[in-house]
Image 1: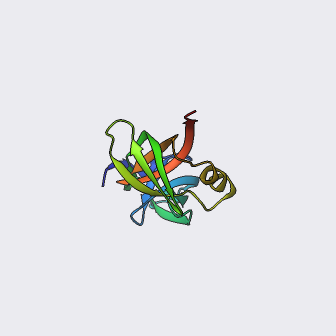
Image 2: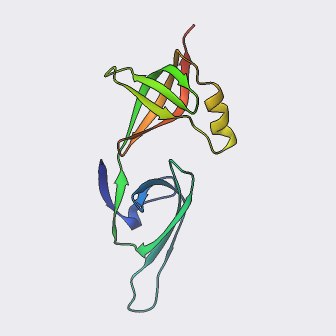
Length: 139
């Protein structure tokens, strides 16, 4: 599991954070200074990268949190196997299976375009791959 650490107060909307052991993208963040002797709190609302679930976190601003390391890579689709796709990494030539994107309309359109021979960009987040977009198709 590849993660870095940062303080919660340094994060911004659009950053990535690990909440409950899952990588999430921050969609909303607010800070509130409590009373005279209290420390400032941050309220984070994030959406899980893999499941699409909304998660929230309330913690002091100076709390150290985990930030997932995201490796952006290219791969070629080798086979379409129903709800899974077999991909070969274009640098290491490793082959692996990835779930087809789904959950919202944009991801459904992406899944419809996945065919053998298509080059895709995928992200390796905490050791788990996720297809992000199609780079090009071979003709």
